[in-house]
Length: 213
Image 1 (cartoon, rainbow, N blue to C red):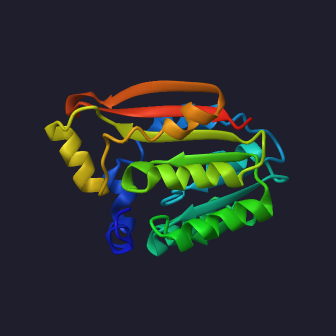
Image 2 (image 1 turned 90 degrees about the vertical axis):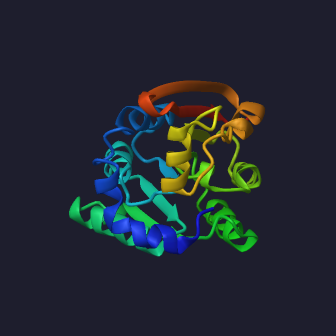
């Protein structure tokens, strides 16, 4: 994935740079809806970033539920902690830092999932940043209990257009990666949706979901 210092430097400006999540709002809502959350659920928010999803996730799982928010960037997690405190939801959120590009970092996430046994996992705008995305997604899938509901929201372009090059540069990513592949191959009730908030750039936002048998 992108080196942590890249996102550490970008963290204070991330929400401004994405216009308050304007372009991702509809696909993000669709992805969270696909998780089928309800009161008391425990969910893992992978690539939580600045915590954009946290208020919505906590609202849906209510006071009885919990969110494990994971990211590779210390400064992005700090922004997420500040957001949780601002919304008075920090009692429902636990934060964890792990470098997903390293075996040791993946192990940290695996152990957290094994310990907490969440039934919902959300990958938000991060798998395209990982060269080892298939291994990472597969190992998280394997560590999760049967019946876990997964959702992925990420950018995608089948061609390396000028717009795709820009998205890749700003996110240190490769948006040609079909990061929903593990879910499509291994999940029940797999679904796939495409949104076009970046139509002028020739880049889509994909929402994929499914349930582990």
